[in-house]
Length: 84
Image: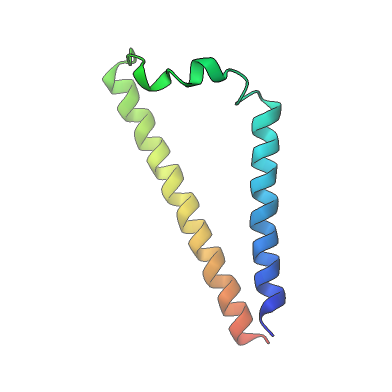
């Protein structure tokens, strides 16, 4: 009785994941594997002030996306429970 809602939820997540993967392939995110293996050993040359400001924006963006995902989950469960 709840299965169509959860199947739709899973298919939406799968579609978004595939779309992001296709975007990464088209923009060349995986093209330079030889460079990628040494990125962890590279020296960071960016100033600390620029890094911290960007990190703050990124943190707010990730927090907003996580909050939106949790809200969508609650909305789906609420819809499944109250409108069956």
